[in-house]
Image (cartoon, rainbow, N blue to C red; front, side, top):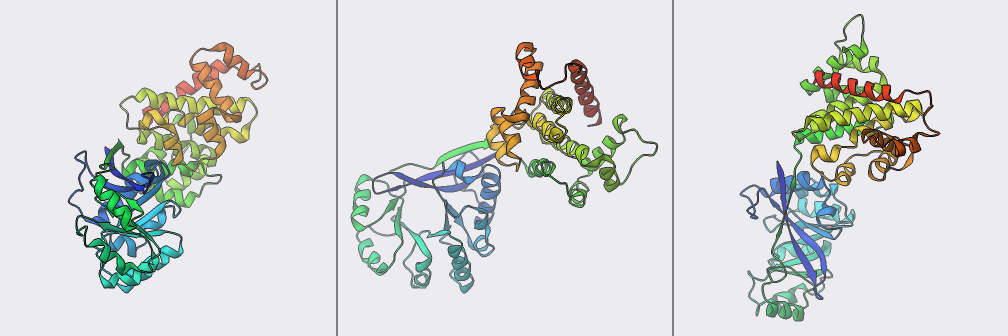
Length: 404
């Protein structure tokens, strides 16, 4: 499953890049699909911004994003950073007092507004004090008529942006008329970007992993989330009734199961089950290795006497292969998870106490005994049977996979 977006650069008078207009696409044909504009905006935000961040697509330049009427009235833009977002009001939007109110509120929140395909109609004059960019389609306005039309904008303090500029001659003419910014095929055609897209179910599972990283779990909230997913509910009950949690009487209530497991073990369960359902790869060995690393990191941290770090160590080991499992760069995946910085530093730079535990696991996996011992000296008690800890992790992973 892939997500698509096109971006077309916008330049200033010196032909320096100042931002991109982001254009929703639903396939590789690089054309706007036949769908409602509000749906296009909603999908662009959910498929691009919520997963990867618009700032990555625009390289931290301004992002010009189209918004139709309903998405403006319902304040869809407020999930975006006002410092780097230009809210582009589509030409199909009808002027109304409700629109004026919504635009004023967005303006007061710090967003820059742009009027797309400005038609110089009188009803839009009232909105101009809130507008930072007026986009003028030069294919809809004759070049020799533009100077007269622009005189209607006396007192307008925003910037003029010319769209569909296709030649050097047009660029120079528009410069002379006072246009500040330019967009069109003369500079660049829309560039297609394609990336692996996570489905809604996978986004839901990522949120569960994030919940497992919280300092304190909200049991009631977790019950509400998990009980909506029959598969997760079933796995929780199987997990709690497995040999590792042997009980005289089986547990059947989700809340009862969570309380019995306790916060530390419940965090592990959430992370494990979410990860096992999140994977888009056809390599079950990667998932098994992630589980082994999670358990091994957890046990090494316990053996070093750092009991307060066990949950974080488990999560660090478990997420150490998430980039391979999701076929996404590690930095991008971690950016979506509100993990503590110690976990991120361990995963990205192998720094800190958690990073040291992860390094020991990696050295042990590779039979790099010299570097393993360097890390273990002064950390792991010499009486600890590390081989037994590793085999325990392997057995644990085997049993968990049988529960899947």
